[in-house]
Image (spheres, one colour):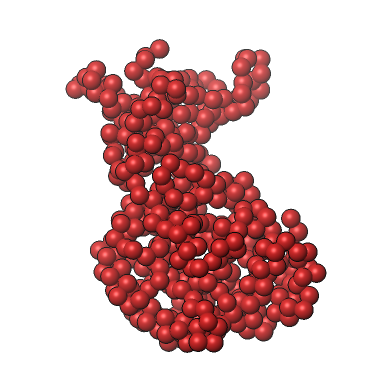
Length: 425
């Protein structure tokens, strides 16, 4: 066994290696050890044929190392094999010196070259050493900072997004903003489809929506914050940030799935505002069985490290067939301790209505954002009533009282429950 090409995980953890875990399926007659070894070489120093110039020093410092190979299922005996194919989990350690703190080059190193040409693998997780993470700041605010920023603790934040998704002017959107704000939401954002059209520039929306927020606050005593979508071409990002900050934006929304983690990191380093990272389009990275990345990694861990304070994620309850395990694991990747990196607040979206609030809180806790769209603006009694129904549902769910009994007498909430029902645990 080549001790330069293979290593035990105990010996790797104290060194500056990033450990990638892959899933792969192969015919039984393919040597998995040779396949994993070829992947480790091909993704770091080599190509599919031997080339001159690769010295022992280069192999030692810059070549990947095979750390583990696990059979799925854990087959030990030839007599246990009853299929023509086998599945494996492969762990390969990559020297961080190969890509430094460069997200694009790191992902290229882990999923490009051989992984895109000669081996169909799905990247399940990346384990980062402490010294590597020291190069990343992560979220500026984190969960505690967001709760202080909003003045809210011990309950979920309530978010609404402006609908219709597109086609409205700042003035038209401001009217919708005002009606929703009267109901007691904490923040309103643009729809992810609405960025920088000629008829509604981000800075103009900020001015109009902030006026609506102030107008509503005179009645409620609570000023709703506005997160503006600045997703655009790289050349426009800094200009957009400067314009919306000057106009008075409370936060930024960025679709990191299409802009990339490097752009998200760049934005987080060039603003003092909290960032809501949207994952629209992440399916093209996550939904392949033998390629791409796992959802908890693509939507959770990487977005957190790149600097998102809030991440909008999908759930199994909104009509999309995401597995519950993946949704819960994504929340864990956003919130569990990760050295100095602050926790990112999960934003639950898709099919959020008052009758499912208690279920979400019991599953993932109170330190979340509940992103309700249609259940607010599609309420029979109007958007203000829809927002109030959501706020009442949140307050009741957090109180620990019997939800359905406590809901009686709250007419807006009762109307929502009549239409969308109550979802049991």
